[in-house]
Image (cartoon, rainbow, N blue to C red; front, side):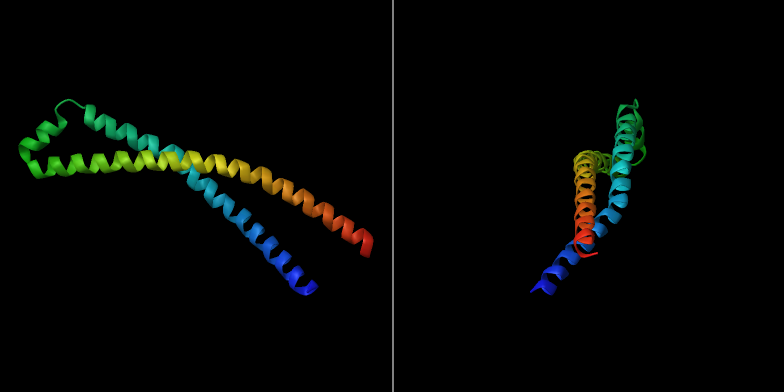
Length: 119
């Protein structure tokens, strides 16, 4: 029973350590979403606000103008979603950092107590 319990504790500890290692990637994705999504939105707004750009394109090729309009619409929706996801994940990652620090402090304290009692 004690071996199973220790295995479970070790498994959970390994899982938490793995999540913390992946934390860096999540942080990079969050930062990229917070930076890239607004740039994409600004570019889409620039194209839509540019006087007569789509009108000139539609005179040459109507299908191309419709495809550009569709692309911009999809781009705006994806950018807004990506920005929202990035903001939510940023908050979640801040909480994770605090919880992980607390976990590591508790783990070190327990390790010291066990070492003191056994060693």
